[in-house]
Length: 139
Length: 386
Image 1 (tube, each protein chain N blue to C red):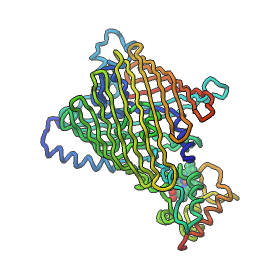
Image 2 (image 1 turned 60 degrees about the horizontal axis):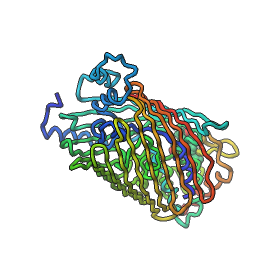
Image 3 (image 1 turned 90 degrees about the vertical axis):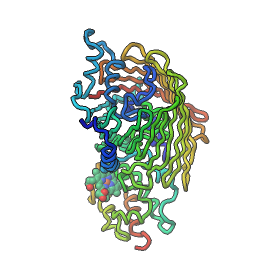
Image 4 (image 1 turned 30 degrees about the horizontal axis):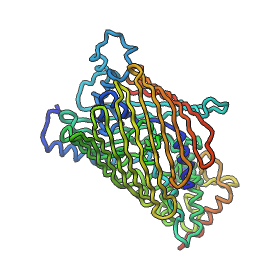
């Protein structure tokens, strides 16, 4: 019986296998918790001052999208335009090729399917996001 | 701050219960969680001993033939009522459902059923006295408050805890993995303000390393944690917490907790004191009070909150408890408003592996010159474990 074996080396070997399994297991699990929206709750200004369109877009995304898209590396943590670009969701200067924008329901009909199962963004919200992507500095 | 209020309100007025650690069992002469739970701070799967205690010492006997011995009942406390045939692996299933009636007793009463917990637990244990354990619990993920508010279901699984534990001896053990933080009284009401203000709700497990020990009338845990690795690095709360209890005597423990952690946006410090007192056979009184400081690194949102909790469990007869619960909180000490939630409840364990609970909650929000109308909520909970 395993319970009878007392060798120290066996303890260590077991721990050596179990600890990594334990720490890295379940990587695909849900991860919503009390910290999820810390960025929105505690930052007043997002992004940099040369990127004035970002803050308004971030607020819209936070309100309309983030509560479904909060998984690892997802929306609540994309607090600068740079991070959106790095995430691959946004192509600077080009809403028409940005996955984020393409996924949006067009308020005047058509477009993508986001926010899922909910009414489309208002046309003001839609154009705010459009002009943010259009005007990301450096584009 | 303003952005947090809706979130807090939802959490405050949705008193769900999920965890299984019942600190009030100090009233039964079990002051420490360690005997009955694999996790020495409570919650999570029960040990064989804990299951037997639940079957024989906690649950009612009314549905058993009087000829059944204590031993026979205890032997049926294993998974699917069977006595395990091997020593290495244990499995458990848990389900909790909640019928919630808001605005109870008014014409606007609104009733809904919530599947709060459905989880599977696997325990692998090695060496004598389960000295080396590996515990994992995968469960249904209740939707975030926003999703719930929008009536959206996000049916995703999540890890409730998974860790390795090694006890050098009965007095000292080390645990590494994904666990609840060691802080305060781990009451079943995970939306008690003592849990909400200090970020110790049902979804706040963290990766880290915890040491747990008992010595000279003290029991305590020191937890160094680095946040949930399932989240992006900027929001992970990294820090330490400590929970220390002193045994005044067999029937009375006093405790102290401290937590300090930070992420890229805020630093959090919480501290509190608590007490657990066994009143007489099976009955208990517990209270906890403390403060939480949030310091926003840039921007606004810094605040100090205060909380208080008082619970009594009176054993009426075996398996049946009458509960009184008072929960108080002031989210921001610089503001006038505070919340008081209180009410009676009944907890009934008709047979082993079944818990039924009914709680009535009265919530009031007090402002400078106004008090919100009374609002009553009825919660009927069914909890089954196999």
